[in-house]
Image (tube, rainbow, N blue to C red; front, side):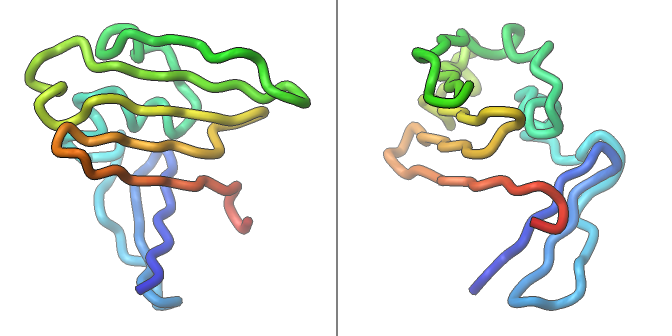
Length: 115
């Protein structure tokens, strides 16, 4: 199954196997986890709230201006679900890897609209 998720400041939509996009949530992301953990803001390019929710560690600068961040949850309640989040990009967030406390991991690749 191929799922294309589109995240904008006005909401989140998903298209499954090339089907028509379906709105998943509205305004501010609308997703409780994404909003409460500061992740929705990060995905749309606003990094200001990350320090509230995570210890942020910068990785060494990458080639061509690339950067990486490692986010470690501050709150025990969030740490029960997420052990760390790795974020990488250059001019925008391009890659996110979420390491869950149970050992699972999610890899998310982000592309500009139409990309």
